Image (cartoon, rainbow, N blue to C red):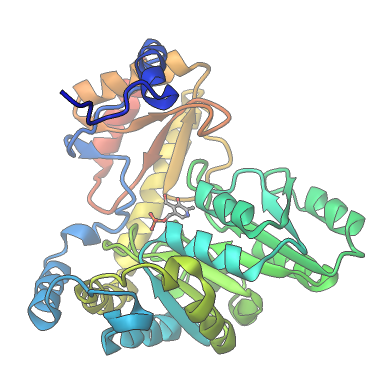
Length: 379
Ligand SMILES: Cc1ncc(COP(=O)(O)O)c(C=O)c1O
């Protein structure tokens, strides 16, 4: 009988040994469905379970059918995408925005089509993989600065000040540490050294700022238009999927024609954009949920610190519990799961220090957190 799979090729033949190494390091993950109290998702406002949003999604399918059938440049476009882009831009005070399939595609597609090999790209050491993949694909020269260290960034900008094309790439709230960028400092460095600024607002949109319009609207409301690109994922606080890149009208037009993850990819389901309109409307009214999430996160941090735990520089709904070893992180995550809490161990190389990454959402109650803290204290 003929072999259907070329098992003798090195890739396939090396897999059993590869997985046995991973098994011994407890690195083979099972894909568990959600269970227990959610302390690990990015559904910060609980919008993924909101009935109005779910109704809007169903209505979107009734109105537009299922798939979009092609790239927006071919036959995938519907006016609802533009309606959403316009509503979103009004909300986050941007001249315009472009909707892409997800934050990963938005970061990779935008950075790789704006920058090219003539660029020096200054990257926070803890930037998300999607930002770094965009940087790599652009062919620009990647220069890391120490995490959130504005003095180090300035030293590097000074060193390369003669270079014409420069870009700073960072997140506003960092996904694994829950700490925040200093946006006024970034904007002043951008002006002083003549750089583009690319800001990933994936974890701040919906949670920070006026009406949840992101950390930029909280920290630099009057200078927001000086941030050249802001990427906001719809997959986190907005409860859906997809992502917006907010920028100037001309830059949007350029991305629409040149960002490869936009041009060469089937447009998202129009129903997602239809539901996106509801999400953008709902999220602006959720001040109480925002307050609750941030107050609970503060309670968690102060309680953990009081029992001697290290929560790094977290100042958001994301609270890492930094631990001495991978084994401790894995063991603690198992114990928490046994007690009905879903909080995951995150280990090197994804992060520098093993941890339990806790993310607070609006469905969590204080007594749940207090029970969670007691388990941490005992373990
Ligand atoms: C900081 C950051 N940027 C971008 C993304 C990608 O966004 P999406 O999940 O919409 O693809 C993530 C998701 O994990 C993220 O944490």
